[in-house]
Amino acid sequence: RSCLLSCPFQTIHPYQVSIWAEKEFRGSGALLSRKWVVTTASVVAGFETPTLSVRCHSSSASKGGQLVGVSKVVTHPKFRFNTMQHDVALLVLRHVHDLLPAVWVEGVRLAHSPLPVNSTGLLSGWGSTSNTSRMNDTLHQVWERVLERSTCQQIYNQSLKISTK
Image 1 (spheres, rainbow, N blue to C red):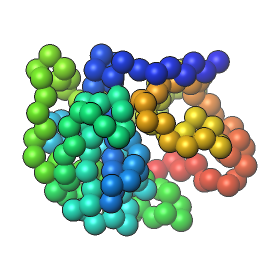
Image 2 (cartoon, rainbow, N blue to C red):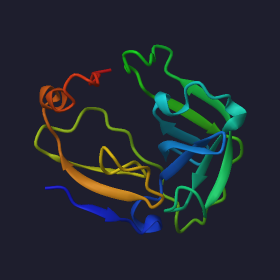
Image 3 (cartoon, one colour):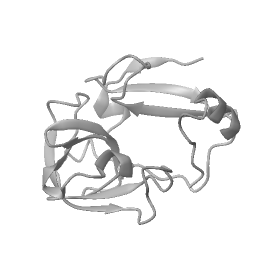
């Protein structure tokens, strides 16, 4: 069973960032270090680098924390919108963001393999919480059970191809 919560940002998800393009919310990302952010290529594709920015250290997607410009985008060279395979990008922040030492963690650690089926994983971000709702301004989290890839594909009814890459 899912449990959706509003999060006290600084203690639970200090690595979480919101990503903006042309002053509009595009999606979520995670700090890998004080200078690097990982996100999906689909969040930043098609936007000029000078129009991109990252909001760090705020549970609000649109205010608070620190807004930092992006100096470089590194998109996976095989990413394509039509397949959504290799949907990953790295952002280099224009300057090292300020961060109180008490808040800093070493950044999110990337998994080397998928979570096992039937285990639970934590999802967090500002995305919509239903098919009809809009983006949330407050950071949310939910624990979900990991499903078989074929089950996910059935749920999405072939309208979205679940990629293995």
